[in-house]
Length: 414
Image (cartoon, rainbow, N blue to C red):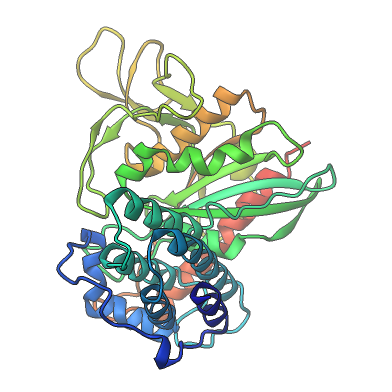
């Protein structure tokens, strides 16, 4: 009963009645993640307040206290996560801003999600909750709130099926105000039917965490696998997207089997080969590099936007018989060992490596690869405000050109 009440309240954006609230079911001494701890700072709270997304966690908090344990909470977590994702997509695709922040802003979803996972991490239900149950509950909510389990591709031959992914904001200790244009583009494109020279295409999207551990556990493969398998609704193309270099788009040519160790949003570092989960199909032996099969030439030649578009074939490798890494501007050489793909050796490289490797393991014929967007910048002199007109225009221009490049690529599908 409480689950049904909270879902209805979340959809309506309304608080629960005071009689249904309990405030003694959370243990504030339970340690939050590094990412969750940033939530208490003024900027995230201001973003949540100005966007109106602060109301969702308040409603969820009250409802969670009315539930006895994990079994009832799983349904609530899944439904609430889907509601939060749907609200963020609807906001991103709204024609008119109504809440003091640009509708293209991806940050309300990011910070609201952390509000929910913080509650789930500190929840103390009457029936108890062991570590495995809590982790599963948080994962259920997290996947749902990212659109990872709600991508629905159409069947039949009348429409092309495109899967696009984006990322959360990152490097937040340097500037907690950061937005990620790839996540903003994912919200703006989810569910769209777009026109291409070869007919309509449906775009379905999801957003991924900037965290090493979920990648190691298979969040990428678990999300993409249903859409790369043989079937009537198999994707015709995938494009993984992330923020890259200042002032330019890059269609990356190769993805490397190497983690370079740059800290993630929990300030955790990993260095070494990309670990592939045992539960997903893979190619054996794993290749050092996997090539993009996106139509780079057509994307570079697409109608111009504000930013130049480059095809980037470069990699960093240890050549066969050598011991030191070298930059190769024209792609990997035979027998070399990967140290970076064209897009580097962070999670943007890794999502493309994993997805392309999975596609090849399944023998799926669709083109796919990685697109790096320009870095999203604030206006000159803005070092404190959470938004400004230049920042908002930069994000909008990147979103619009990202969509145009996806359409250009989809237009090559036969």
